[in-house]
Amino acid sequence: TSRRLGNGRRTPLDVRATPSFSLFPGQIVAVEGKNLKGTEFLVSQFRPLPRLPHPRIGERPGGLSPFNAAVAAGPYTLADNFEYEPLGVLVDHILAFSPSVVFLLGPFVSEGHPMLRDGMAEMLPEEIFCTKISPHLSRLRAGLPPSSAIYLLPSADELCYPYASFPQPRFSREMMQQQLGVPEGIESLDNPAQVSVNGVVFGISNIDALFHLVKEEVSRLPALSDRLPRLAWHLIEQRHFYPLAPPPAECAGVLASQDGCLRMQAMPDILITPSQLKPFTRAHDNVIMLNPGLSSKGLAGGTFAKLSVHSSVGGATSDAVLGDPEMAFPASFTSVDIVRI
Image (cartoon, rainbow, N blue to C red):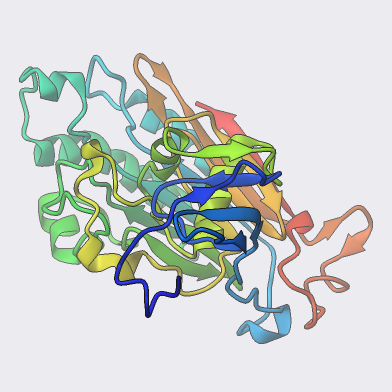
């Protein structure tokens, strides 16, 4: 029945005759089929949803130009101490790479750290940040060119932050400087965030949506066979940084009242969704999906990602591709390396 005449009734979907699908709770779908008895809808196929427009190069202010970026997600210390050795090694890697932009995603002082959870910490979270994290941030800021940008993103697991919900506003400048000792020249972004770097649109969501989706998704011969990229692609198709509804009990901080802040305002060229699942990168329909992994895992170092938008690939040059105003984002001109710390 129609939405106008349905009186809020729900109709089950019968997908037994559907050759291919990938579904999860809260997903918006377009289906083709028949409702013969009024008690269930017999689905013959799922139709693709309209996507956000992917701006051509000529529609982007300043066009596109090559750059390098580094992306890392917390936690940044091992499970048995607060010495932040993985963060120090990460900073060494980034300084050797010398990227134009660095995205450091929380948690920086995680509420899930065993020593904090068991009451064994001898410092307050803010003191841990000031004495253990900020010196590494100062070394990173001093070692990169002044033109390089460094961004911090909060996390719902962050103890040095007053908002444990999702979405989250950025760290305030007053908090960063006065309470956490973050040096000048380091900025913060909202969580989630969309930001343009040299004409390339990044979409960044610092919540483990992939881990939550992997437990809820059901599929049969989906068009995108690799499961982890397929889960990330759901965010693109749904135009939403957290499309799962309702969220699981362990993620009760997802605020339905702030749903507008979770909707994508533009088609991202690069989607960053850090997760405890296996790190990966995948290009699909000119969108690069990236899980950089976590910077530390238990008693061992983790991973981060190095990303480059190149000026030439296989003989083609940026003048022929990046300078073509009719081209969309050329994912083939972008390389991503997952690096172990």
